[in-house]
Image (tube, rainbow, N blue to C red):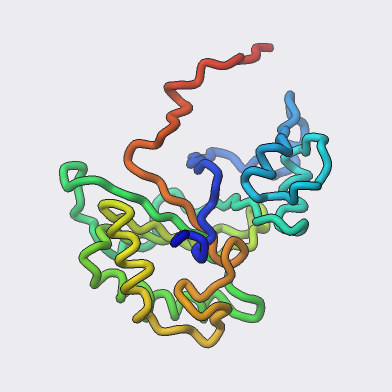
Length: 220
């Protein structure tokens, strides 16, 4: 319930370190076609319930993402290392649990990245940095030119658990000043899913696909 205004996603987070840009002409031909099962896309609220039965290719899905009434597919690239370390650089693995709150921001139409970042760095980040519930704050600009994403900035904040997240982001965040470009009356003041999309990642995910997956693996 509390995550609804924050556009919390119902899908998994994939974190990759890409060595090449697969969106270039050199990678136009692939051995297998990427498929997006529609039943999964419906569960993720990415497409309407009545949007056909045939599976979609990854390319077609990303091209229409967010245009049929569902939430946009968040597919972003940012620099290999975090650009800004705003709190908690001294934190170690021995300091306790890390409940990661990761969100991407797309500024409203007509709002420049400079204007949006000014609000973040002068109003939002300082407020969160003062809260004892927040243990870590990291952020980077998004490299939009790689795949023409609508999102401009990614932020990662850590807490010791969901209760601390609620205290900081729902209760105390009421004191964060509303920007002139606000789209809603409460923090984060941006339209969920489209302008503010987020996900929670605990220390131990329920599904570890790297070690648990035992499905069919094709060879060629």
